[in-house]
Length: 184
Image 1 (cartoon, one colour):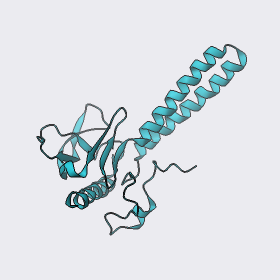
Image 2: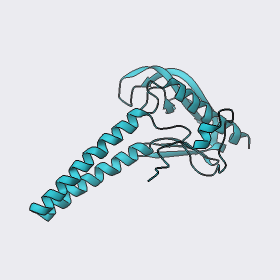
Image 3: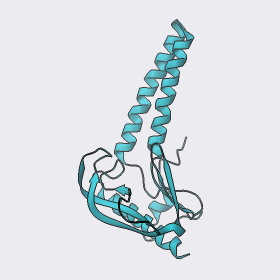
């Protein structure tokens, strides 16, 4: 079963020289592949969920159905968390840019975007409190102060840790989408 939210479009991989290679630009797309840290964590969560589901079946066959239902519910929560983890990231379309987080999603229309640029600054390592020097893609909205602007993506998040070429390519693509649609 293909998971379209897991991979970037094949058109993006085939078109090295074209910044916006998509035919249907109204569809939300992630302009990069999820990183190995994100995919690995989700895979481990799904492995854990399979063991919990197996435990729910054993509990249901040998004893209390209410206990089995509770364990089954825990497995469903783990599966939903793994899928949400895979869905996290930056998505672009002709409508704007969308930053999908674990608990919240922010969407900004291209008409509200003043500037999208890559800056060198301290960034959080894998979302933890520890900061390291890295690059961040920042989105500045029109009419808002630039103080405390959250980064769309960084070189040290779960998608781009130890993959600086992938970050550069993804940042260039988001900047190209911004340049294309802020003009229009």
